[in-house]
Structures are given as structure tokens and as C-alpha cells.
Image (cartoon, rainbow, N blue to C red; front, side):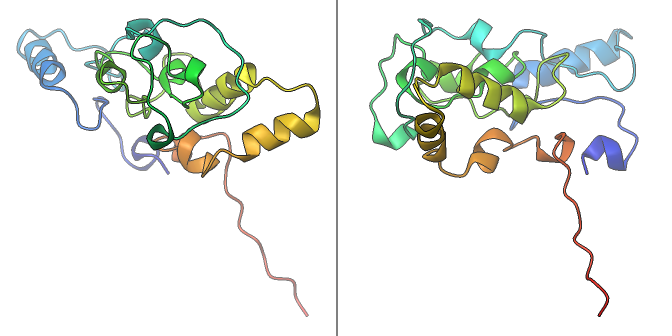
Length: 173
């Protein structure tokens, strides 16, 4: 379960950890009596990390995905275009794209942007949209080489995912 499914949450402050400017903005909102409605995300914006990122997106098609230690990324090109899975398209902005500024892929710690129900599914959709495969088998091979897909796509959002775990019941003898 998510925190919000467990206890009544006043506000969500995203980040791992939240950045000082966010914390200060929340303090100013409290002191100024300008808090948003209860349950709102505070200290972030409604854009995606991709919209804040310095890298240039060229919408390339990918034949192979790389882990960050397997490739030296080009500092000017979109990490996704280079075959590095970046959660930027499925992650709420406001962090100033701290990870991508240093050529590291976004990990998704700000959670999904507004109107995205399942962050992992949104990231999976982004991955599927760049796979360059002529056959279903080739697509399965390319995507099948992604290590730990659940950990990659749902690092911070599995409890709120549309994928719910089911408990197997023992059959009576």
C-alpha cells in the first residue's frame, strides 16, 4: 500500500530527498497561508522531467537498451535516444532535472505527473514507443534484455500501480 492508502496525508512533498528550494517553498506557503487543498503535491510542478531536461530529443528508434555503466552518454543528446532507460517522460518535474544534468537517467523519484495514474505503465509505454523491431520476436528480445523491468519501471510507484498482487490460495485436498 502507498502512504496515502495507509494514513490520511495532508500534503505530498516529492523527491528522494526533497530539494531545499521545495522545502522552503512549502514553509513560505504555510507562513503565507497559501497552502493548496489537502492531499496536493507541493514543491513540484505539472511538467515532466523531460520538459526541464537540457538534452536534445531526436526521437530515435532503439535496437538495444544500455545500463548507465555500459555506455558513455553524449551530454547533448537525450538519454532515451541513446538507449538508456530514463524515467523522465513518466516523472513529475520540479527537481530541475538534477539527474539528467549530470548525464544520469531520471529514476522517477518525483512520482507521476498529473493525470498519469500508473508511472510504471507510462514509462513502459515510452520504452515501447522507441523500440525498433520488425517482428514481435525481435521486440520481445530487445525488451527482454532490460534487467529487472519491475524495479526499473516501478522503483518508486509499485504500491500505487494498476498491477495489484494477488494472493494464491491453497487448494483443499
